[in-house]
Length: 545
Image (cartoon, rainbow, N blue to C red; front, side):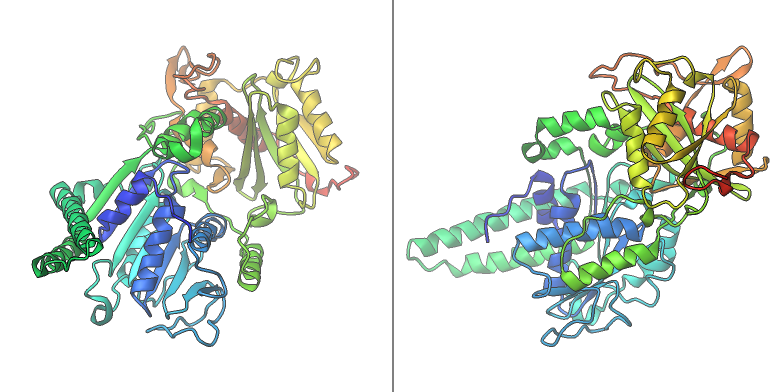
């Protein structure tokens, strides 16, 4: 096997080896690849017959991010699917049995030595029921429902002390995330207060001393000498002390993606700074804590307005392919992953147009709900045609190729983002070019800010006929924009704070605090609430009633 490179956060986490470890790090710092993978591999290798849990917020996330990352790293290290472990099926003959075998193997990784890892996805009720676990990996912790974790999963991490009590990593927990953007998603940040910094420093010093002693023993043997007995005794004593300290240690650390600059390169960081919304860049790349607007423009929006909607039938089929072929997954980006889209209904959209960023926010009004099913944006040289191409590619399999396009006067007579035609013409033309029918609905002048503030917050509070609900997995950037949209005082009361929206981009101020996406959301909601299209579901793919 070739040499394995670990960056500083990865090496430090493994060397400290605390029983409870919380790593808050930016994207591409190798959290799954080289922090989670060795953690799971160590536990399964060294606690033969044990069962652990891999906790993910949704099965879709586990299928597309966590599990492929683990398996890819193991493959590089010489552990092969079908040889050393199997996924999603009963272990073959020759594999040892677990101390407590799972009732089924559909969402289980089984190692040759009897160890098992069970995928626990919070959007599948009961996935951690009746389990006895010896370790937990909690991935994308900012999206984890802590109350469910505390009530259903953490109590299962009791392990079997009679078998594994000697190991410092028995009952261990590894929590991974980038920086959370909401109060609810910040549940794991308090572990920083639980960390005993002196204990961590002592562990580091002990690891260093063990390395020095091992080097002396190695040098003696290389010189043909027998290492003195006191060195071997001292080494055993240090190992025992280290194991005891690790067994009670809590380690918390925050890292930005810059920590992995040697592998990522400056180009990646610059690209992310350009392509991500500013606050996502701050939290997901730089791992900075941000303040969330407590009394913002959407002050009535709550966590209860977010939902998950995975199509388990489609995802299970993809999982079955992995179990059958052993091939790593590249899950297509498609509406087939989603369970909240009504296939024979049109898609309703609101848009926002800007020289630097363009948005589509898509939804479907179903009864008294407006489900905001997905949002899209493009930046800089990728204009409206590219944005609509992204939308049409995602919804290629959607049955009703009809878009209800709500627009106001901002879509008329403007041309700076595309060509000599105005936005409305370009939008309709591009959708029709992709084979979609467009029912365009003009909603007049933009609603005044204080009226919009009242209308939408009353809707979030349940005091209007239509209440917005937002698909959490498909609208991460939109949700962040809504949460952080501020207010300013205007002559008629509250105004959405759009002070920095039109400023030129700089290295220090990358489209900071833009509200463009929230304006697209406003247009969608106001259109659906004030201009409902009663018979639009009868429009066929060709646009004929």
